[in-house]
View 1: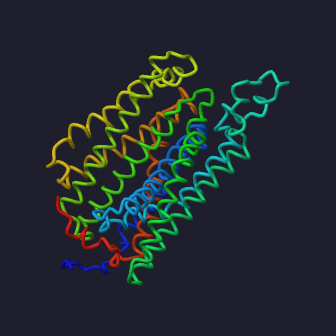
View 2: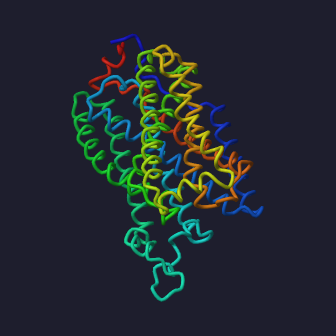
View 3: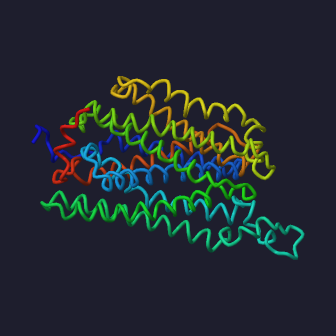
Length: 402
């Protein structure tokens, strides 16, 4: 066995706790400022944006773990406790997201494009035939129930896989590993369907007249690149603090390849969706991009492509860049900000329209969610050894070399 302390644990330091609390306090104050300064709708849009984004990072952590088990991949075993800690945040992030959606529905009409009962009432002057056609999915009981149900199911899988992993530390053999493989396969099948419906309901229904069969793929690509970037950034920061010293250039290289490849995949989906809508030129489809090229969104529209495609393509094209910890740290920070902007462009035109902005509300709310995520994730990380010491592929991972 390599000369590493396989019982090393993360110590949630006073400094990290202090920063988490400060960021969370900034978030609470910013939300309060937004609600009581005449910007309630903009505040709720930002709450939706950040709660969905953080939930997405947790989902990506769980997806990362499941893929490693099903693929029988060994390289990531030595860092698997980081995405596991991400997935442990999922129940809390999901709870906040549901609270934002429900309160936004009933107090600030967050989903005003379809939530008004008159839109599906044939006797009302507001009756909308298109909305009525989608009412089987877009009605309050199904909408809230399915979103809540999906989050509960994913959280149960997260808890199950984390439990098997920590039990494996105490129990020799491959029994826990085999269970993890089996339930990861079940999770991936369920996740494939439910994540698409989840994206349709939470994000696409903000503009209920618009539709795209590619939106779920596009949303997943943004979620996955963001999750990979967050996992990589967390790993680098912890390594700088003296943890995960067994992680070498080859581990980073593989993470870098994933970040690079799925940034290109995100662009492919973005361009495919855009090209098909542009070529067909159907008003009910082109309206989506029209709203993102007016009211001050056009610079953000192009900036989104530059940050999330051009920069990672140019910076991460070489082998050396993917093996450089400083370079990867910078790129992952940029991509996390870039895909926050990506979700901003998905959400804001359908909620606040021309009333969008970028100031205290946006920065402060985002800081608050970062603080909340840091606190729960690092607390979870500190509850188990940083290495799954009885994992059957640990030796392979510790000697990973490409």
